[in-house]
Structure formats: structure tokens, C-alpha cells
Length: 381
Ligand SMILES: [Fe+2]
Ligand SMILES: [Fe+2]
Image 1 (cartoon, rainbow, N blue to C red):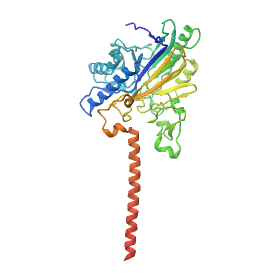
Image 2: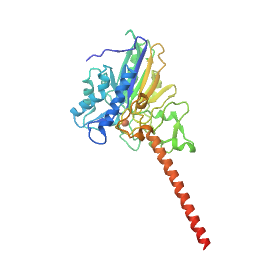
Image 3: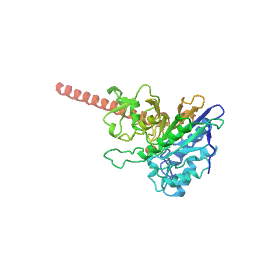
Image 4: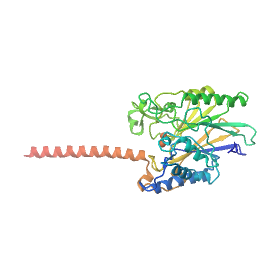
């Protein structure tokens, strides 16, 4: 079905809302599932109603099911808050989306059963599922103003001795370069400003981090795989939160270099790392994380959230982005206990580490006092 082209609003703005790592699945009985689903759907509903996005993008690790009919119902569940408001949505697939019995091609068709789904597969001959781009037209519909790339970043790499996670493949990059060139040609030879959306981040995210000093160790994260010999914190100019190591591929597939060469990409946004929501610039390109919006997965206390990206056709290179967490909407969790409603998982972990350290010091001190008392008592004899 032919979709209405996306357009900037009359005020020149266009707002995208990102939903990361829902990991929604069929089981509604075990592990406090109903309360967790309620929390997640309340977040999505509130976010859609308050933020009023023009487009919603699901950033991968969206859904898991054993059968096609289960998958249909899960997709309906996670897209309902968006569809009921007739807001267009798009999506990329994540590594866990392929760890279920329903193939990606079938999942894509199930999403496409929803009239407001803009996802499709641009080229069946290239790697992955659902690679495509969509253009946003000027408010009067006359001009192609902005472009969005939605890229499949796959799952694990075929040779685990070289990398744990896969990279975006060469044939995808060739498709990207060819399509970006065609768009630029239609635009009088000038690249169309673009953003990239994909599940697994590019290795360049580590350029937003610096090695932690010894006294910062408790506030740092240990790098992932290739980067695991160091602990990291965010560089000062990077905004947001680093809750875990960016789980990037262990070698560079050249995607970031391809963006620089084509000259169209202003920024790229990723999911995959459920606790991270930082954003910063590498070589002038904005790299942003969106943390999970779900209470069904490992997360960060009361801080699952969504990210908005606001574009302005009158100032096209000015991309504004902001995270909105569950607690920012004034929502109260049904699934978290009162303690976890007030701390994040990272804070909880740190408190435990401190608690253990204090406990150990107290135990050592008590033991020393006891030994001292015994030796004094012995001396008295
Ligand atoms: Fe995930
Ligand atoms: Fe993932």
C-alpha cells in the first residue's frame, strides 16, 4: 500500500520518537509479567500522548514469539499506543529479533499489516531484513528536505574469534552509498541531510568515552570484549548516562567512514545497550543511545524511557534530541518494589558494593578489636 509521504509540520518542525529494546514476548504469567507490561505500555501511551511525535521508530529487539499468531498479537500490543493515535511508525530489527521461530521476513509482513507502518525491505538482494530509507518532505510537500536510513545491524559475527557482534555488511554499505548518491543528484548535487537508525552501535561510540581514573572506578563501566582491558566514563562534553559498556562489534566494518564519505549523515541513533542514553559528537556526527523503554528486561530502575529527535526545516542541520524517562512523566511503577522505584539498578549495585566494603571494614575492625582484647586479656594473666 502506498503511504502518504512524511512531511514537516506547518511550523517547520518534525518530531521523531525512539522506542528501544522492548523485548516484548508472549508469556504473561510468570515473573510479575502483567505488571511489567502495564508499566511499559503506560510509558509508551504517556510518551505518545504528551510528546506527540510525527513518527515513531522501534529500535530493535522488539518482540519474540514461538508462532506467527503469537507474534501478530505481540506486535499489535507494542504498536497499539502509536496506531491508536494514527501516528506513522517505522522499525529496525535487533539481534534478539532473530532468536525466535518467526523469521524476520514474516515479522516485517506482520508489522506491515498495520496501515501506519512505513517499514519495508528496499532491496531483497542485500544482507539483512528491512534496510530502507524514507524521505521527509518540506511542509508544503514540494521538496525532499530530510532523509532517514533504517539499517539492519544483524546478530553475532560468523567468526567469534574476530568479533562477538556482526557489522553492517559491505553490500549494505554499497546500497547506502548508491542510494545517497541518487538522493544527492535529485537534490542538485548536494547530499540530503540524514539520520541513521540501527540497533547495534558503531565502534566509534568508544570515542565518546575516556579511560576512568582509579578513583572513578565505581562510576565507570568495563569495556566490552575488545575494550575490556579498560574502564570508561563519558568524556565531559558528552551528555546523558553511561550505565553499561557499549556492546559494539570488535572490528570496524567501515560504516562510519562511509557516512563521512557520502557527507549526508548528521547523526546516528542506536539501541541494544539497555541502560545507556548518552549523546555526543564524533568528527561532527552526532552519536546517540536510546535506552530501553521496557520493564521486561534488564534495565535501570525507574528509568526506562524514550528519546525524541526534533528536526527543523528552517534550520536543517540543527538536530535537537532529548531523553524522557518513565519517572519524568510522573508515572508510578507497578512492577518495581518501593526501593527500586527510587534508585537505579546501577545505584543499587553501588550501594551493595559500598555496603559490602563497609561491612568488610566493620568485620575486620571488629576482628582486630577482638584479637586486641584477647591479647590484652592474655597479658593480664
Ligand atoms: Fe536488547
Ligand atoms: Fe540487542
